[in-house]
Image 1 (tube, chains in turn cyan, orange):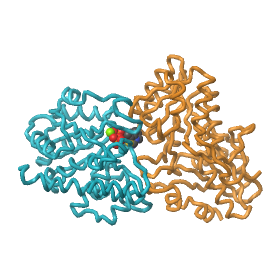
Image 2 (tube, helix red, strand yellow):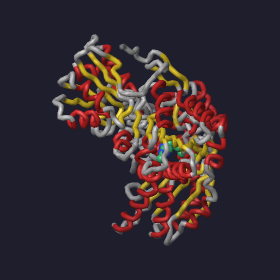
Image 3 (cartoon, chains in turn purple, brown):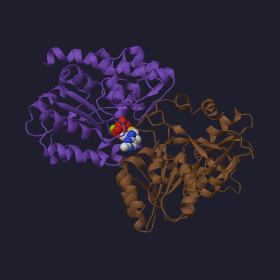
Image 4 (cartoon, protein in one colour):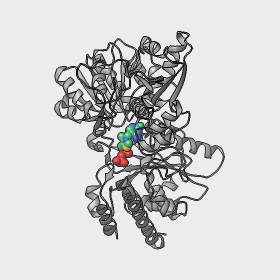
Length: 263
Length: 304
Ligand SMILES: Cc1ncc(C[n+]2csc(CCOP(=O)(O)OP(=O)(O)O)c2C)c(N)n1
Ligand SMILES: [Mg+2]
């Protein structure tokens, strides 16, 4: 499938990145590092994997909403003009939106809670006899919240093979490198110990993501955990260094140059 | 006495207060849950690396660890945002830090609507939750002077203490010389009775400027234990008093004043201004205040 799909997903990812930069440029600030780093994963999810009105996507990492907004733009849910009001007074394009904002299934952002709701949805969908799959994105920082592991335990216990957890393994969090703040590794081993089929994925490689999603669909009798290595700021060379901060505030020329670098 | 609105600012008063405390007392330890950059604890962490504990983003665990440190003779100061210190770790604050005889101090940033995010970050119920804990002292400082004084107050206290924090450049309304952290009238003489805590003080002062000297203001930084005498003596002068707070109208200053007045059987009516019983919008502080009619004009209009 990749031969035909890859170029178009690459374009999708590129467009997500461009949208992310345009959104941040409005106020000169935002979660650009996360948006750029996760663009390939979201392109694969929204333009290959998720079945409309069947599967569910749960964004636990509320502040990574920028990536989801940018993906939903290409689905026609949001106009670019509105997205460029990201974070502005009165805008519904909030930096960490609540449930009820189109495309957002839960209120994420008080971090470490989303996977529990994803487990509930997976249980509910199974109980309803539907073949819906539930995909949840949680960050490496969120692995430090105990509730995430309570949810993992429940997912393993209930053998939720309709649940896929993506760990946004960007190796950073608010205070710095995750390894320095509070080590969360070995994540694959930990998830396996909780009853997941788990593996690492290069989430900046569309081929690798597609292969991992295929692999996830084949797992039976247990939930799936994909530890998604990605580079904050990916696609904008000057940002790949600069973006190694949790939140970017920069003057307009920095955003203009970033857009040029992205091409 | 009249206080100028935001007459000056102080750089990172909490950082300074922590540093001074750390130098003076070797039993003080500080904990952060992945927010050290955002809560002015880095100077302490740099000077006293052995007495600073980064626990990662795990607030419930942080309160538990703080409780353990307290049991080994340290005075733990657990620092995070208000929502996470209270909603996320409420049981841990209660059980690990507040049943005594050991105790801890919690300092909670982004009070009320002082965050650009919505429900996830707005600590609009923290004062209510903390006030409900037996023996908990609850302080909502109005400015840099009160924040520094609150840290000293907490250290001198006997039980657990919850302080709302403000980071980076913080306004200074009150002169720190011979300052005492207690309920006091900061505007006198007017026939419109206002009562404030925390940032509500500045908001009330801004509104007073629109009221041509007709407002009085009792400012109450320590919500619990409430100075019931000071509150009731003040309220006795008015048919109606209006409370102004950076918090839900449920469970904070407005509720505490109502309880005090009703407890003494006084006829004074209490009008509560604060975050109404719905989730506030996201955005800049000015925008949210306007939307909730907590800007100067909105408050003046409500009390005029
Ligand atoms: C429960 C909770 N605690 C603290 C915070 C404050 N906070 C916001 S983002 C963040 C860092 C979390 O790590 P991660 O999601 O890996 O950050 P990123 O990779 O996006 O920089 C923190 C501590 C929060 N939103 N929720
Ligand atoms: Mg991270």
